Image (cartoon, rainbow over all chains, first blue to last red):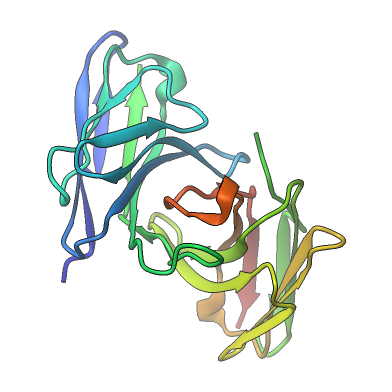
Amino acid sequence: NAGVTQTPKFQVLKTGQSMTLQCAQDMNHEYMSWYRQDPGMGLRLIHYSVGAGITDQGEVPNGYNVSRSTTEDFPLRLLSAAPSQTSVYFCASSSRTGTGRGNSPLHFGNGTRLTVT
Amino acid sequence: SQQGEEDPQALSIQEGENATMNCSYKTSINNLQWYRQNSGRGLVHLILIRSNEREKHSGRLRVTLDTSKKSSSLLITASRAADTASYFCATDATAGGTSYGKLTFGQGTILTVHP
């Protein structure tokens, strides 16, 4: 099992460019999510998905788009990159097993470090 | 918005000492989780404690949860240089108790263990 795989590891964009951050998981997890990590702010949820074809917004969704056509893949699109989107982006997945009074832990990829100039 | 606030922001100790990190949160939760992040890597889940639990152990880790004070602590006993990392608490506060993998993270504690 590779777990959660994110590509690319590093990316530099110019303001206004668009790009897609890739995320794939091979654990057959129902839930997938995207977080961004900025210094001193912990991780903040951008978008999440509870299954193929179902996505919803998190805390900081503006400027990002997602889709989930398969259980395995959950790409994150930056529509028109801005310097404020300079961050480290993490994709995570988790299983539906254990919902209710407890949930299963998140499995994270190793991140994509994005710089927008 | 930040659900969790962690204290201290940074902690420096010697190998063999115990390390205690604290987390406070604002709303009712279903569970609280602790994660570890090594430099340049993704987060790794350490332990999950449900809202109806008060204490949980896993190896050298001990987590407590006080829902009346909306706070949790992570204790790492007999620390090692390899424990050097950032530690984050995260809360699941999804309404209705059904989780969709949505967590709210604190800012983290940077732990440095000197050999």
